[in-house]
Image 1 (cartoon, rainbow, N blue to C red):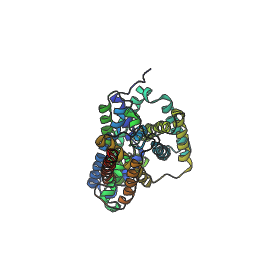
Image 2: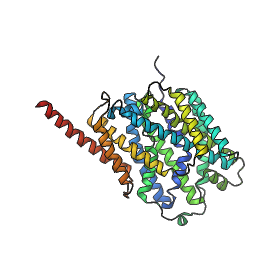
Image 3: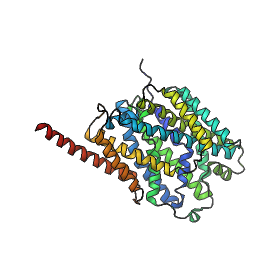
Image 4: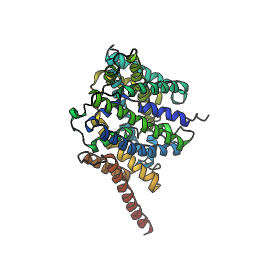
Length: 401
């Protein structure tokens, strides 16, 4: 029996939920030293770059009906993609823990019953979402997204209330290029996941476009909330925004609590679900739904017992691994029209990826106006095209002789 496909609308809902995230708001707070207009420009440029690349990555999976790690196999071989599947599972376990941690801390600021209790509650709700399943969330996900949309409007209004601008006090502690890179890094973190959802779409192109645009708009919105709240209120903490900006408004803490819990569940669900899908690229014997539940449990334990306050180094690590990976894949799929899926390992692709990895780490120490991701991916794509053209040409000559 053919599996039910997801509609363009439901794909949009999924990525709306991905964008409404405490982690996105917190990352936006790091841009506050740039001030309102430079910070907003960095957010828009970074998300523009990131979401165009996110679209191209998602379209590969949508058109080929393959998961993200299966599309990686098209460049790196049907065994070569196992390395990236393992790395992806590890980053998704990390993201799951970070998201539950951030959600528990924020919820605790509104209703203090302890970080541990909140982590367990959020983890249990994520497990519930997983058990319901992607194609069966239906009306539940629609109701959740409508609630999130309305509640996020409330937080936006509170954040943008006219208050004392503290941007002069913040100081210029982040460059424009670094701010752009942080804005690119968040869409980049979804590169190894997006095809897990677009592959199920009824209309591949439309669903991928809606997913990328929806995520880009909502993620930029979250960044702006964090940045503006930090500039005007002196805090980017979601509980602090609600409590300080909404003094005297009855029931506001409850509204904020709903935002925190719902946004954490809908975003982290994607991380855990994709961990299960990536596990299938490691071994077909792994039950993906059960694995996703195990990832949620591990993430919940991590949120309880490990410190997870600052995620900038984590974002840069994800970028250094997956930006060059996607660059090699884009060059192969869209330009070279090559598919190495029949090979066990494509060593040539791995060499290009390693060069891209080293370039990204070096570019982190170079202050470019467009950050590290775009220059790294452009250079890695050029290297991949040139190297494979040269090797292919040399191989052809060898065969002719």
